[in-house]
Amino acid sequence: MWSRWGSILVVAITAAYWPAARGQEPAQNLKPFELKVVGPGGKPIAEAEVELRTNPVPTAEQIQKGTFVRQGPYGAFATTDAEGILVVNLPTANRRFDVFIRIPGHGPYWAGWTSEGDGPLFPARFTAELDEAWSVGGIVVDDAGKPIEGATVHPSIEFKKRPGENRQLGIGMQARTDAAGRWRFDSVPVSLGDVTVEINHPAFMPVHRPLARGEFAIKEAGAPVAKIVLERGLTVTGKVTDDTGKPIVGALIRTQFHNDVREARTGSDGVYRLTGCQPAPARIVAWAPGQATDMKEPLIERGMGPVDFAMKPGGHIRIRVLDHQGKPVPKFRIFFQQWRSLFSHYEFDHVNQLADENGVWTWDEAPLDEFKADVCPPAEGMQLA
Image (cartoon, rainbow, N blue to C red; front, side, top):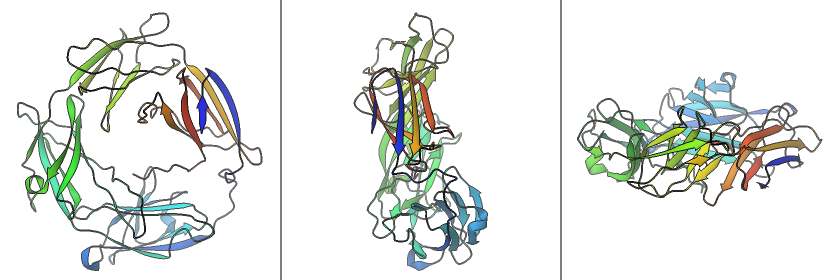
């Protein structure tokens, strides 16, 4: 854990517990991994799309059975063959391997392995048995009954896990309403009688509620019919200035309700407008180039006054990480953990968190009070969903 108190800090860390920097690793042996994807009753699922996450990301040449589709931001996508089988050659020295399966008509599935001791990371063969699923959907409207286009709907569903896995993992998927306010999601496991969703739109207050299967299930070849009403949100305004009182143009103002981040930019007069806010205590964060990141914690309510920011020059931080041989560790990651009590990560998630090729990370908009962060090795903290 690393903490920062002053306005300028230069840190050199010897990372003796890390492997050699990328590019210095010895050539790795490859081992085939066979995945069979089946549905209820063990029926093979042909052309099932599978996401494979490991480091480095698998290439098309490593797919021995099945079809390579594309590379994504975190892993590679491939499909099973006619018998529901996918075979991929993977480096035996890898420390983590995850398989994600999301197919309409079936519940989502996740199998993950991490290295323990000198044993193999993953088995030679594995069968993923997916659950049957039902489709949920609805029509999102305002209080006048007018359809709302562009609202995002996040179902709260966990992946089915491989036997012996104790970790919990949400799917992180979302649907978006069309011009008629309609949306649907086709992968709710049959074991769930209802599904909790979060619905967000910049102009409306977010909704977080369960949807009963009896009301919101979509019949086969049918369309959504049940309606969900969103209420207009409150607007928070304020002005952002520098330490001389001059308006700051283009400052980024952000807050969060449930999992939805709301943001706005200041205009030429330094004024911002955050719309769709919920009447509740909030953490509003202000960021601008060269200025110290700041935060206010107002109670958002009707008739409230402006939430202004008078920003000060930013704190300057420089971290350099070395391996056990004294060589720079490129692309290590800063993982923010705490700032001013509670922390939701949106406060700094727009900040660059990766070091450069010389093993150096700098930040010129650091807040002037304490925050805490982890310094993570390259490829650690891989996002799962």
